[in-house]
View 1 (tube, helix red, strand yellow):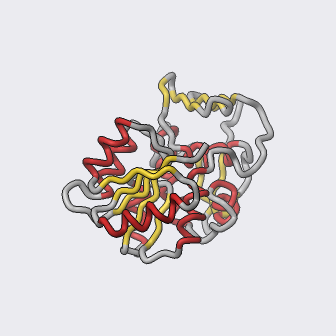
View 2: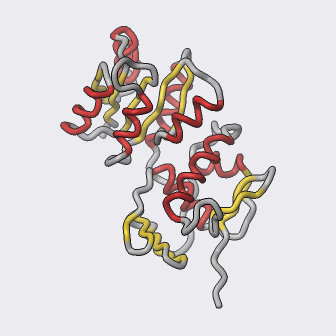
Length: 231
């Protein structure tokens, strides 16, 4: 079944080009000209991915993304003419799965869409179906994470990153390995993605995010998931 994609941009010509490009790839495309209209359309019909322009009048892309993330795990790719690390971090911190800078090539955009839509792990899962880490319960089958008895809402990419790290415990995992295992082989240099996503995961599962117990930084290398020591 074809994926449903919501294109959100205030420029009619851009929406028209994007709709033609995506429809040619058999995606089912819906359009929205504003953040407010995008939220309304998401309430009416489930979407698999949102292509969201950052710079829009009224409710901007970042605010729209935060509103989407408040109750949905739909994949979100932000589109913008800005290309600084600060802009990328802001987009990812707002809840985007990925970030594409205008102007972009059609093959690049389609590759990013495929990566964002990917819901199955890129690496085969080997290990238990459930894992308990002190107050954290992870159910790999239902993709549910509970912390101290309450569900922690993780985006698909957050869950895949956590899954990969948890199933490779006590190992220094390089930035490139994590990016290619979770986002895809075309990734590898987007270190800021990991910094944002690890920080978000720390806020959701760590007892004290400022002094992490599980998700540890390996300076100049990457990250490591530290299994709690048993008495």
